[in-house]
Image (cartoon, rainbow, N blue to C red; front, top):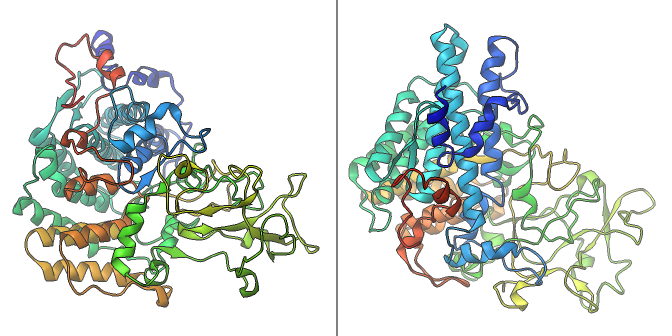
Length: 581
């Protein structure tokens, strides 16, 4: 290795790369044919850290939070003047007033570039194995080439650039616009027809690569000119249709029960194409997507009394209003199985809380076996129900050991006027709108039954690519080519597939246009980290929503972190700050 050249890239790609040579690369081993000895161990030791690093990329306070809070979907106030200020980074991101020193942007840059540097190193090692006759390394090599493209697509989406780098002793070449698109296209096309297609969703396969190509061609209009009006070329849309059709005609199927996509057993769900495997095989698995928005007074897993939410991100009133506008006088919980699933079944005689409050409700409960209790899923509103602790901190049970389920007491912000957690539509940066109970909440992911606490050891895979998104992409490409009938057919196939609860199966639409399709993307993909990208592509990102009025097109891209700019200062002109910062 050329040491002098190697250290020149550290501030740019990821300075932590320097430590990979002495890091135990076997610390995170996936189980999908990644374990073994000898040659197999070399393969597993090369690719497992790359897959495992996606956990950090998609942490709630890294790329996931960056995507959600910058969009019109989620908002994170300074809760009660005590929680979640964190230097104002979430408020600035939501208002599009971020600067190069914003740590949410900086932490995302670090996580993505570190993961990318690991993928480069894995590619290098696996290529050496292939050259030395280790045939078992060939398909993992294809995976790592695809993984480099995936991570670079995240960088392109966030900062408008990609890192072209094929060996660890090379200086990264930074590409933007059409050059970046062409590089990613070449990388993905080099593996799409040769990569193995029998792996589970925890590994990149042929259809996952096809999905990445479809994403690339669909977003190409934005990537070519991030600050202008997107020019959606017919040839790009044709490629989107080609690759999405390949996937739709493949082995996957839409999940009749929408929320099973985000359950303990979702690794085997036939809709999921690519996910972060969390089935107890990574020591760093987490359930942050589940617990981050949930009330800190709610105990979602009574068999583990220390589980609770954090009262972080709330649903913006604007995003909720899109459901209201779609269904009019019908409650979206009754009209669309994707909006809500009732798991906390409250007996009829307990539903009326007139005159009931935390001071007189000792007998206002029902009971259930601890392991059978599940919180409601979807978008949580108003008063919520859950387990309660006694004065000694123990979960309250009846004489048979069943858990007592009460209206949840708001202990975090009600003060002397003790009351229930009552999630309000209003959530903003005012004092009232920042209280811990303020805002409806996302409850999309199940709290895993294998998790001993609310933060770690979840068996629920984090879904990164699934068939529902593929239908949306094909519908959009058809619509942009003028095939309204084809787009409508795809959207209605998607809507009516969620039919496990017939009374809540979304009815087919009679018409489709870009605004309706954008709305449908929100209904299908909320709380999965896609909203910002869709807003930019559909021309909605400069709109105003709760506590956000900035309309500067430069904010479509995030600033390159100051720490990266400073680190690259010795390479004159290597890193150029994005416009507007």
